[in-house]
Image (cartoon, rainbow, N blue to C red; front, side):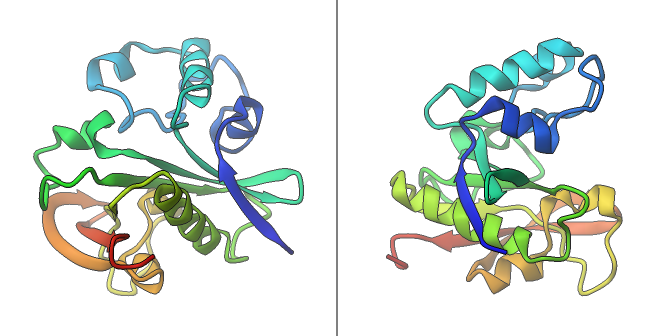
Amino acid sequence: MSISVRPATVFQDVAAVIGPKNPGSNVCFCLSYRLGSKENLALRGPARAERVRELCAQDPPPGVLAYDGDEPVGWAALHPRSDTSFARNRRIPHVDDLEVWSLWCFRVRPGHRKQGIMHALLDGAVAYARERGAPVVEGYPVDNKGEKVDLTMAYVGTRRLFERAGFTKAADTTSVLAGFPRVVMRLDLRDNP
């Protein structure tokens, strides 16, 4: 299997990975951290999909997709922190004033899990952020210390996943997910050309 990671500019591919089976459903569509709370809560059903379609047409797009050949098999939300709710989040601290890119959500389609796609997504997201001139990439995974994380709450990744990609812990947070504390993990791209 050869996985490639590309910017999430094709709405149909994004919808195949993170969209609902029923277009009228109110699924996250990975908008809860990307948009302000008021807009996120106001978008219902097909309006959520239309908002994602708009984001896919923007520069930069809302994330990256992993492909197995031409089939989209994974997603990672990636965007400059200043354009996300992390810019105002009181539970996830700002380490400094650099123009950080945030990486906050992963999803691998059923049937493609346990094949290293999360690692490919993380590496591909970092490569894309570097290409776009990001000085630092940050993630906010759970620090589960090797314990099992409920699959529905594993979307933020784990500290170990980020460490394997060269990230280091930059700060604790007051955010807890599935009973595990979240930490700020960072990779300084200025030091890693």
